[in-house]
Image 1 (tube, rainbow, N blue to C red):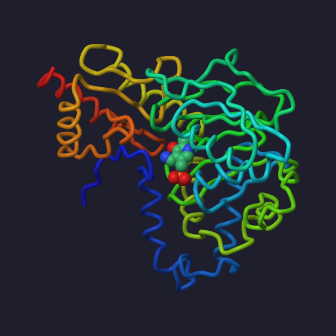
Image 2: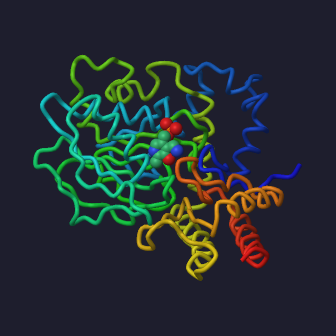
Image 3: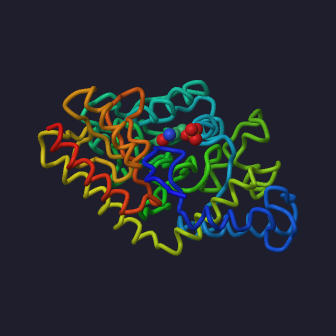
Length: 358
Ligand code: PMP
């Protein structure tokens, strides 16, 4: 069996050890005679998986007792809705920072629920970037401030986070646990799991518990963070297999160490950025100070060459390099589980492609 190098933006590459372990345990989970897929979410086998997932992510995120870690179905898009449903009270407004397509989607959803103030907007700029702190026009008394830590489509990433008076809420879907950060700077962070954490269709949420008290009485039970906190994400039948895979990934991240992963991620991105910085054939599409270590975006001299690039790369086992359909170009998503050998193979391919076509 040949595994390719997978540069998809999400669902994305998972650690091979995790897939192998899941495969080993698939038919008979720890001598139970059944798969974890078939086990009761109230039984002792799943209970242990769930407890370890919660404990590991609490540890990785550095959560004190003031925070709860939740597993919520529906992915990050569900969080675009749940955040304002729970935190944006009647008569209040929330500050949203527009840094690109995903921040834009979060803004659109919040506007269904309440008043949104766009505190800064560089969402359509090319080269892509995130706003500098001085650009933020924050509203005194805002319910919260929302940002997108890494714009998966444009490849712009916050390198440090702004200090805000209102609770800071972050969509960390495409860079969570790719680098250390201080959870205490945030009221809430959420991340669709399908990049650095596991399968799609589920989000990891870390929330300062007092914020969950804000939800109005008419928010449905299943949409309340308070329900998830009180029931330890087991109010209803959870996506148990997804949480199991997330648990295995959390073990893997603990084993690697967050600081090591951060170093490796920067080194991997650096290999590709060095080529983009050499100038000429490949042009990066995010501003140097803000460019992402997770999603590397660039253009070639023509769309025809970009198409050939994607096709030839694919033939060599380098998959998923086509840029998002809304912007075109090339995007290499190199999350935690993308091996350095994959990035080296991509760089070699890029050099050869330039020699042939440059
Ligand atoms: N936010 C960001 C930054 C994303 O990259 C994505 C998905 N690519 C989403 C939100 C939406 O996630 P989901 O598809 O899990 O709803």
